[in-house]
Structures are given as C-alpha cells and as structure tokens.
Length: 430
Image 1 (cartoon, rainbow, N blue to C red):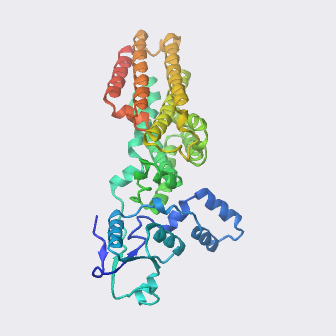
Image 2: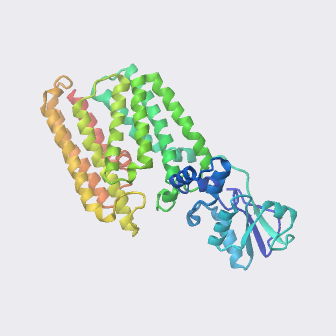
Image 3: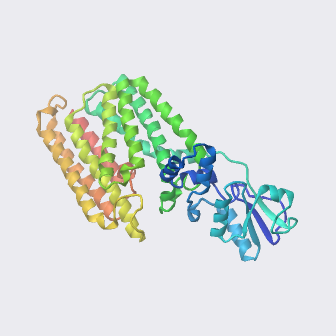
C-alpha cells in the first residue's frame, strides 16, 4: 500500500483528509447504506421530493462510526500523534455532521473545511505549522478483491445445474453446453445478489467476527463500484438465459426475486429462511432440467429438498455455535438465539435421515430400472450418505466447519473421497 502523502514536517497539528485519507469508503454511500430501509421510509414520508430532501436525510443518517473501515496506517499514525500531544483535525467538504461524529469518536479535536484550509483562514490552529495526510488518488480494486466480493468460490453451488443431466444420463455435447451456459447465468445472477446482500448488510457485517473482512465491509471495494456491477451482472444473466430458453429465464427470474426477498426480509424470519435457502438450492436443479430439456424426477426433487434443508440448518448451526464459542450475543439480523442450537441440530439430523430414506425408497422403486442395469449397487450409496451427513453434523458440533457445508464438502478431504466413491458406484450401476 502506498505511503500517505505528507505535505509538511511533523509539528503539533496533524490534519487528515477524511475521505480518501482516513476513511476507506465514501460518506455519501455510508450514509445511504447505514440503514437502507429507514432511509427509504424517511424519503417517502418527507413530503419534499428531490435531491435536496435526500441530501438532508443522508446528513441525518445514523452511521456507526465505531465500525467504519478506517485506513489502519493512517489511524495508527494519528493515534501516535495524539499520544505525543499533537492536535488532530479532519478535513471534510460535505456531511460535516458525520465528519464531526467521526472526530468525536476517535478523540480528535475537530473538523475543518477544505476551502478554509486552502485559504488559511478561520482555522483553530496555525496554518503554517501543520502536517497533512492528504487524500490519495482512487485505486482500482484488484481481481482478487473482485473475486472475493463476487463470491467466485460460491460458484461451486451452481454446479447443481449439471445434476439433472447426469442423473438422466444425457451426457452429450449439446446438453453439456446448455448446462454450462446455465451455470454461467446462475453465477452472474448470484454474484449480483451477493453484492446487493452485502450492501444491505453492511452495518451488520462490520460487527461480525468474520464477515467484517468482506470486500465491501472492509472498504476494499468501493460501494459505488458494487452499485455499478450489480446491473451489469444481472444483464449478462438475462442475455445468457434468453440464449437457453424463455422458460429457463423464468426460473432464473424466480431465483433472483426469491434471493432479493431473502436479502430484504426472509432471512430475518425464523425457519422461513431455512425453507427459502433449501428452495433456492433446489431451483438450481430445476433450472438445470429446464435448461437441457430433461424431465425432472420427483424422486430427485424431494431428495434435494430434504438434503438442502439439512444443509441450511447445519449452516445456521455453524453460525450460532461460532457466536457461542466467541461469547457473542444473539445475531441482530437473524431470528435465532444461541439457545436454539440443540433444536436446530435435531432438525438438521432429521432432514438428513429423511433424505436417506427417500433415496432408499427410490432404489426400491421401479423408477431405477430404465436407468441402471445393476440398480442393486445403488444400495451402497446409503452408508456413504449416512457417513457424510453424520460427519457434517459432527464437524459443525465441534466448531470445525465453516458456515457453509456445501463449500466444506469441496474442501474437506474425507468428504471428497466419499463423493468420489458415490460417483464411482453410480457409474458402475449404469
């Protein structure tokens, strides 16, 4: 990271540009996303439409100054100067109320306007004896930061669109091409939704022990850049969806609408969020079937619902158990309590066992005969399913699983071996 620009020798007064110097974000965007729902409500009830009314509302927004993304080098330098007895002032040309709030929180001496500083007038200190840390030129986010913000690692979930092609034994170039395009459409759609979710959860993420490191929460990616990327990603998803079929675009639209509803409200509803997450995972499988034009098996559909319900419950269990281990209070943006851990674990185990039962009934049915010449081999999948679900629950109970069990399955060695064994058994049964 480049060193801050120093324009004078160090003396008794340190002057720091707030935006671009101390703050790794923009006050306008911070005010807008400090509480988006409340901002919209105030704007709608203000009775004075227009930019002037919006600016006034943003100036009075409630920003959590304690959790803003400050530049650590600049902040440490300021605190060191404060320890030496130097006076510290922030330079801010807009939203001076918020700038004063930041100064008060950090124990600084006040705020000065850029025009007054340039003219050397109306200043509470000697303008000839200052050290200034000026704003740096904006720097583009790296590809690594973008990949982190877009949650590229989450694209593993979108491989579910290939499941109908595999289970229907339609492995040909045309089907694979359609499934691949569906994968790209879902990935772009999901990335846009992740960015939107991070914007709406900005304040909550900054108080979370791990989510505070997300690109937007940490100030690594400008909020304005995310606002520009969201429509671009969704436009690509729409174009890709139209290239497949209008019906697929309809499924993709249902996924996006449900995801937005989840981000805005459903994730704060107890158990409604679990059902919604399970439905979003299952929608990927439905989209895969629609995209390649294969009939979706009812067995696959009900099996998927139980599997994803269990995984969603394990995800919530992992989040709550992490908070319990860290001694944190109940989450403010989820309708769950740490005391709910036992019932959530029981429900996760029950859903997992239901999935295994459904699979056993499927193997016992006549539906396997047209697809498998040796259907009896599919019974070997049951102990592997029991092992994997049991391991996932045990790892979550031991606080050794990240908060997403699907990604855990891709990273965990024993899980990868179990999945590989399942694939080999299915191939041998064909």
